[in-house]
Image 1 (cartoon, rainbow, N blue to C red):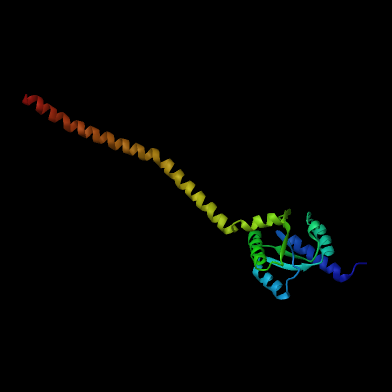
Image 2 (image 1 turned 90 degrees about the horizontal axis):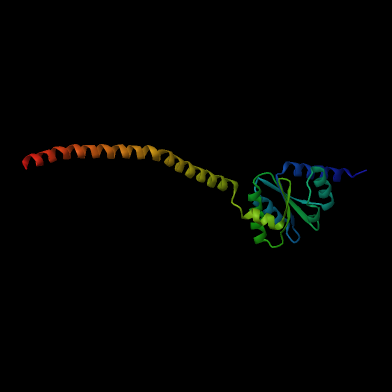
Length: 186
């Protein structure tokens, strides 16, 4: 029969995997308790960092349907369970790893897709969701402004053409009496 403490730990890790949109596995060998606390704070509210046992995490990942991380569960492992923006969590981990060389990103998964350490670095290089949405909105607004200009162009061209025709008729009407006077004077 399984140890109740281990069963509870597996159930907790399974729930974390199921509730998370992403998870980043790290090796924390050489970090102090104070540094781990600092790491947890730097991740913010959208992520939770937990030091886990590899065998229990393998069982929990299997139960949660997470594949492709078994090879990463070697050595002392910590997992950042991300419920918020995965880009923000990846950036926070990258910044912490720059300041603390002992933290090594092993890899993880985002929305069920396994990712290598390089993929996590690329994810950290992306701009945040809010910035990307703002850029998209700006691009769409620019496109809409161009479309409005394109739809308004024929109308404004017709108005300019009508004004040019009116001006030409007035000029011709004004020139006709002047020509008649010049012919009469001869």
